[in-house]
Length: 292
Image (cartoon, rainbow, N blue to C red; front, side, top):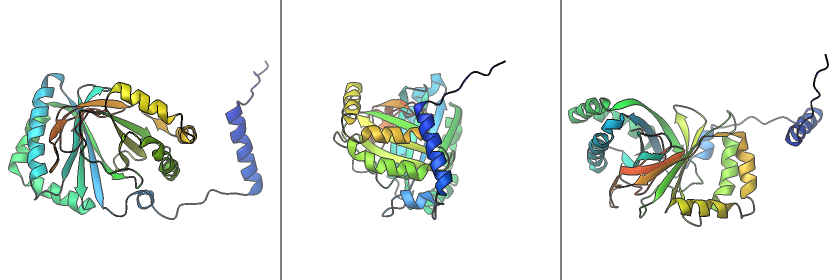
């Protein structure tokens, strides 16, 4: 019985020839001399971020948003707690009945530890957790760092649509990803759509989150189409194809709050579109799985 013939596709042939050239020349991939957290994160700040995903019982979503917004406002305004609410969303398109929260800890891991100790001794907060637990199906979180070449998430006028895109990278490719996006991000700044870029440190590793803001779904389409007209954007998309990207999530903003800025609460994240219901910093729509 004859085996069916196999012919390499153009990309496969290119990779085979490249592999052969490397083996013949003796070239090797150079090992990294430092952690990617030191090479890719911002040096001028020591902020640590936590992203929370809460899957809420459908009949409890409104009560959950109201309860979460009330507690978030108190913590955000209390100077004794070294944490800030960057944004809170519920999913508009994407995984439904999910809430997403993004927290900032200025001062890194010591600030996070200090906050956790204080919350554990806060009776009112512990009662809130018990009440919230009755409304949840599941929850998860991750600790993140900012990419050095991305904007720091700041309050912006709304309403907006937020899109949270998550990418699961192959182990060992984080540096290459960062190098490509450090060049590519300049193609996505004209409409101020780039909100923040993060990579995971604790939780699921080799995960990247890109957070974008648009005035509307039509604005999103036009902005993204414009990027493809710029020389270099197509190359970046091709080169980062070594990773697996989850679909985007879109969120709609209702209210957001943050220090001296307009207060807003609630937004949705994920590779989808989100609705903002309670947050201190990003008044607009966002896409992300529901989770607090």
